[in-house]
Image 1: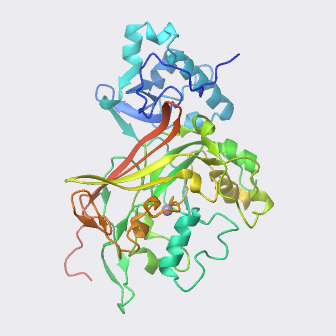
Image 2: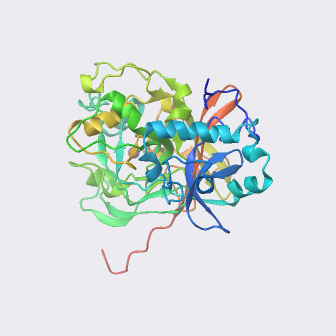
Image 3: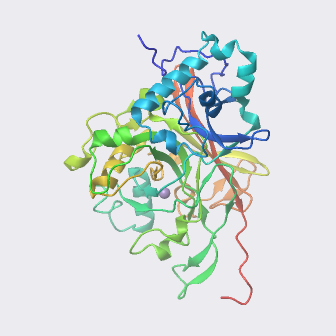
Length: 431
Ligand code: MN
């Protein structure tokens, strides 16, 4: 009887504290390098270590591609993802087996252990995927309703199409960066409602958006839509995602084609891709969908995930948690987003990234952006040190964290952090 790698009773010879994000039940994939070995390669996080999969592949302890083909000595996990669901499952099981407390292969071979297990504190993390395309959705009913109430106070909070399909736009893959990469405040064109002409300059209403990112691990052919079941199978895993947004650039440029420069300057993701398989025990029903979606978006089984999320704002004077919410609130699931994306015949590729849309819950403290938390700048937040914020200031660090919680363990995502740097100075004399 094969062991289920998600079994809560599994133990590793590498101790993971109960509050660790990376117990043996998680095994998330990332790309790392070390000072002594600067070549980027694929690893999985286990406790306070990174397990070097390239090294294991070299020693034939892992062979996901079979034979002599190597996929872990690469600068992204794309080649591994391209091998498909069956290989993902087999490899996860094999890695789990190598790390188990009763398996002597690594446990009792000190030299091997010291080669393949790198302390996480000494590893530099890189962007785990080569991002082929980035699409951002707008799938939290609470978030969309809050925005509607702010900007269309006389009308219905939701647009007429919102309950019928996951609304989204095609974003920029080129500016997706890994956690820790500084984020430069964007310059842009904006026009405050009372001004009669637009101006250019640094955004003064710089915001974050708390989202989850879906990493697409299998393609579909152009012209070939996919079923909801296929959509689920195409999802390799999830990351934390911060869809940085300039709230003064956005309203002026948005009509009629959607966000453009306001969200194109940076998108941050966490370095560890937590697999769909590791999250499977945390599947829950999403909100009731009424009216029922069209057949191509029909849900047959739970597709939402119970993942607790938090947002912290850190300045030189300390850290304040400004939001606590949950991924389970999303009205449209990731599988529905993917099925909708491909319904027209759009080709999805290995390495596509889908942003869930800002994740807000029903309560005030569950809002996933400063736009909502400060109600469009009218209700400033007070930080731990007494300072106030409506939007982000230069030097602020924004940190997203998240984990699904099991009995005595957690399937965590690590952190998705970024620090705001001042805008590029504009040449004087320009207007
Ligand atoms: Mn967004």
